[in-house]
Image (cartoon, rainbow, N blue to C red; front, side, top):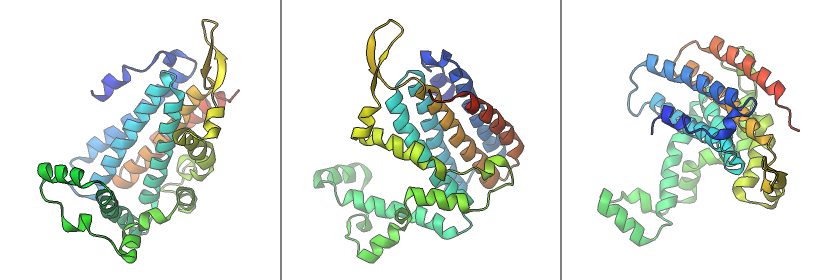
Length: 276
């Protein structure tokens, strides 16, 4: 299913005030990214740009998933995905903005520690099935790692997300514009910590479910309806930051004027969506 087909399946709540406008707004954000990715031309397999484009693919799919869930009023699923979307934006922006190339190298080598940890903790039957279809597994995948080797490969994970967001905000902005100067750390509690409760299914998340009267007059359990447009609004903010940074830093194209115009529009929409 391609992008346009997915967006044709937005739910009935897209007709609620501001929801359709916000869904359209996000699509215009991604259209700028796709336009400039196309203008950039072919990307070499294995290059840093290739890595970032694949990261953007996951980001766009997650963004689409939030819009789909929200417009079908699947609020808990949308919250869980928005928590993921926040983490994606923080990690991406930390890498793109960071002048220290060691941070990128930490990110790159973390894959080896992850593969080793995963394979060494699965049962032998699963490993055998993998080898039957993919061939022999390299020895480094299954060998125990020393404490020093594990620390070297897991260095990327030593920095917690809150600290990463704070350090990201302390780095110089990529341009001297209002959107580029906006932070991500202040959203840690309101987005990541709060919606992690839904992902983890802890007691706090259960308290967010309340009886509400639906349009037919029946009392049903649900999340408060003001969350629906807010989830899309928050997603739009994260999408703007990530798309503006990848086009300017990775594609070397001047898109700040386009994104600043969108940011002003976003601020206007945000001012209209006050939680009840």
